[in-house]
Amino acid sequence: MSDSPRPLEPNDRRKLLGHTEANLLWLLLPAAHLDGSRYSAAVNVLLDSEMQAAIIKAQGYGGTGSGGSGPADPTGSAALAGASCEVRAAAVRRVWLAELASVAESVARVRAITAERLGESSPPLPLNLATTVRSIRWLTEAPQGRVLDTDDPESDHAIWFARQTSNAVRQGQLTSPGGHRIPSVSSVLEAARVAMKRPVDPEPVVQKPMEGCRSCKRNAGHFEPIDVVRYSKPDLCTMCGNYYAANGEIPPLAAVKYVHRTGKRLTTKVVEEAKRSERQPISENRTVERTRWHKGETTKEEAS
Ligand SMILES: [Zn+2]
Image: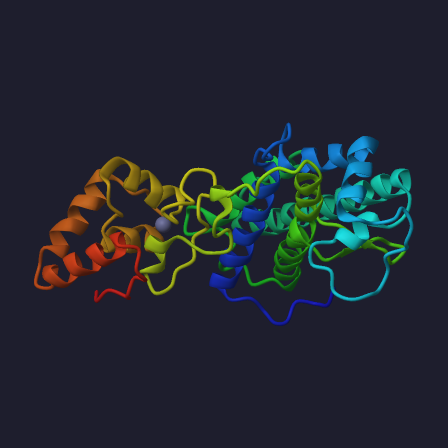
């Protein structure tokens, strides 16, 4: 993995942390057709020799092969078929664990650097996927996203690394210390699905994991991670999604802008003031924009 390309802009930091959060939430979500989270289900698939045999049979692979360099294999199925079952399962699990631990450590490091800069206390948390998601939220949510203005090369590199690595565990590309190709969690789950002859899971909750909230985007392309657990379908972040669920429409742009600018909460007062300001001269345009959004078309930047 090469070094991060350049110093990050505040919005890059938000975006990369958002991607990392989406990858970790994806791993934590329940697996289709299998028990437990996607991550634990994939580990169980690898530990289950019957399942492994079924996977190999279903995919028509033999039991040997060394992985290593070869043609691109985005699904990781060749890597899955390489080596013997026992060796394979243990090696894959070791790599996943090591990579996810490095993601957790990177995010914890960013949190520690940021807390020190702000003079806030940052008690050490146990390093796991859930606490890492919490740390990312601590970094990106109010006040104004603590990490955004942290101009620190180590922190930026850690943010970039966490994104790349969490992405690799989720959907490739991973290699073992010995240079063997390691399947991603999604490729193991996909292989299990095929072996079990199950229909494709529509996976509505991860429809657009790398996209930002469509409502927040109206504010000069501001990136806010979609709440993939609750609001993946309307493509909204937690804040805009909560508002949408309660009101049947996305929050007024002026209110969203206010929250982004100040890091304060989206209160009824903020919404009312935003609506008042929107009823001013260009209210007709805004109604048109809102209607388009409801039809699922791309939102244009509104005049402000
Ligand atoms: Zn939003």
